[in-house]
Image (cartoon, rainbow, N blue to C red):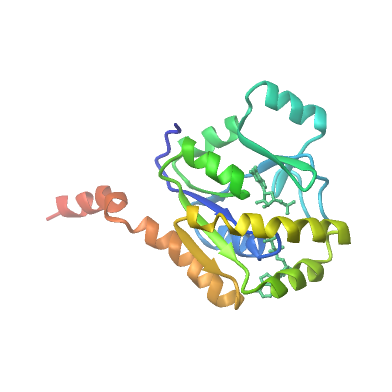
Amino acid sequence: MFHHPGNVFVVSAPSGAGKSTLVHRLVASVPNLIFSISFTTRKPRPGEVDGRDYFFVDDDRFDAMVREDGFVEWVEVYGQRYGTGRTWLEGQLASGVDILLDIETTGALNLRHAIPDAHMIFILPPSAAALEQRLRGRGKDSDAQVALRLKHARHEMALYHAYDYLVINDDLEAAYRHFESIVYATRSQRERMAPVAQRILQGF
Ligand code: ADP
Ligand code: 5GP
């Protein structure tokens, strides 16, 4: 169980649904919300930066971290391994900022055991055809990778009912507003706001 004064948001979606697009914008726009940087054995895509998008590591380093219990959760998907670093996450959580984790469904369900009050958000594409078009249009994955990701999409989407919130990413602007409003609504919950309300009341 992790001590975390801030809110924890976990976001999952089938690959190509637009999760990175929405998450990058959210983290850039919402103050005091940071992105959880995972470790991966996948090679960087064009434009990805080590230490910003992922910590890119080789198999030996990943194996060593697994042996040292260095991950809160880790999975193998699409032939690569991805994991949430324990030391990194603990440090960020203790600082009190809100944190957002972009992880796939198996890892998300494992994380919920470690952080039961995490807010779980699932992003759905408007249709199977739109998902395929986006994966191909992104132009960053080979045909074989696209096929693998589409196959995995059905399995991932079947788990949507384990999440607290659903966002359909059809029109990007509408989806973004929806997504952002989940963060602000969570921050506005009375129990979260009670210390601030008490400070205000003390002035009367
Ligand atoms: P994910 O991170 O879920 O794999 P991306 O954010 O990389 O997906 O989005 C996949 C592709 O779909 C990108 O080319 C992105 O620009 C595009 N995209 C994202 N959201 C929308 C949307 N609402 N309408 C059309 N295209 C979108
Ligand atoms: P991509 O290769 O497209 O960046 O990511 C592939 C999948 O791995 C996405 O669904 C992403 O959410 C997931 N992922 C990224 N980091 C982690 C992680 O640390 N743990 C888990 N379980 N999944 C992750």
